[in-house]
Image (cartoon, rainbow, N blue to C red; front, side, top):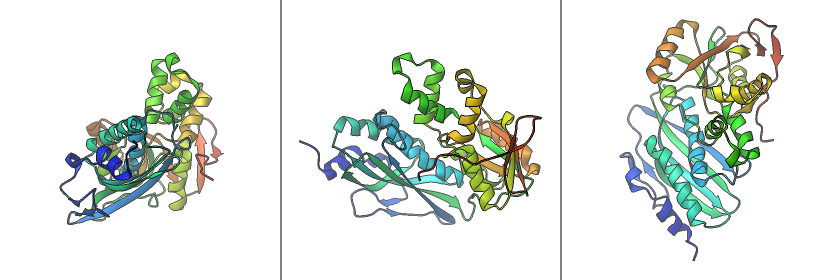
Length: 322
């Protein structure tokens, strides 16, 4: 017999060992009661992920659980916040216990890694959909945002970009038994992104603006320059590309994935040129590669060049829902 809603929650999502000490009441009541540390602000984000829209519905349930939480933690990272709690609204076509066990495992794996407690939510029957609302804390007013880039700022990107979009294409079109090691790496970059929480938390006082790369580098950088009333010049030759992406695709395809692909959940941030040495020190201490790819300009719009080549305007294309 299928589990009831409350049996499902109790069996797969009641993780008493994950309850943070600042959770007065978590799962089991009509709402959670949480304690915010004195001198801190609450940062809240929410994302809905739909099967076969935001992730392949036939992906491993553990990867779906992991990925759906990771994209929310990435939003907190872009604000410089430390994850503390999250809620989960889960819509399922049916109560499949093996799927739920895997989903709960992947979700819990990442939640425990960041000491982020599941404190409530909802389950219902319907098309596969995962909605997570994540809560984080920042010291009083020490948050990052998009609208404060300044002309002359250098533009940085963490890690490598383009991998996830390429990985999704591989996942959708290459049989599992035919995958090589580079293709497996790209798929993992899509299914299990690494939220740059430690980086985001360390950027306050160094970065002037920040965003996570979810819809594509150009689309997300455009959010920064539009809200900051400025523009950007970037060098496509400076884009950080992984060896796996370079081995698998032509230069044109690499640039397409890096500029427009999205889903990498790396951080794109701007910092004054005077802070370049601090950015490098941060890169060394966190062991996260931080690459300068251009600079912020007074002239609006985004322009691109490749090395010493000519400069041309770029349309900020990326993923759009509508």
